[in-house]
Length: 267
Image (cartoon, rainbow, N blue to C red; front, top):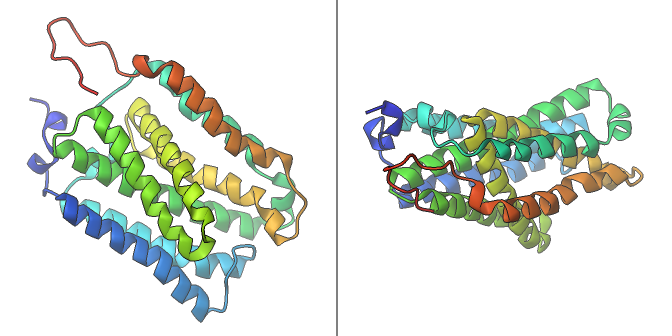
């Protein structure tokens, strides 16, 4: 039997649902509480200056990133987290391609140019911290854990995306009631990133694209710092509608056809 088809526990430690919940809570505490404490200590509460980025994002997100992959290392799950052995049909490359187009359109190049190269580089780094941290936690550890517990792939897709959306309710601390709508949208994005992981066979592409997507969203929100509205900022929003329609139409053509005599894939 190929080792990639073995349960995660045959390649490392086992993670219970309760233990996973504890890991996620620690991850959120590092980001939310750590971000508040560090930002407050530095007297910074926004991300529109280089110094603000360092104390409100770079440090807490960097710590969360280290924690995430420290957990992966402790579990011994590097291979199942970083690679995916459940391929889907090739037409689903449309998901990351459409994401890439939305990112290119959504970046507010004019506003960023006024910030300088130091700020732009730091923003790229911290948004990659977000991408690799969240994808490592919710498409890496979460998906591996759910598969290890015997969930069918359709259940893995559903529950990993729901968990991803629900944890963003923690943003109510900084965003108020708007965090509820954000959680719904983020849950949908989680499914898109899940499909990107499967079609690419790796957790890398979805991590990079997640970070770049956040980079585009933040650049488009420079209006909060007194910039004019950037029409391209609508692209990352429209992508949800476009992909939702495409995937709704092609929902029955996601999994690969099973060989004759093989056990059907249960979704």
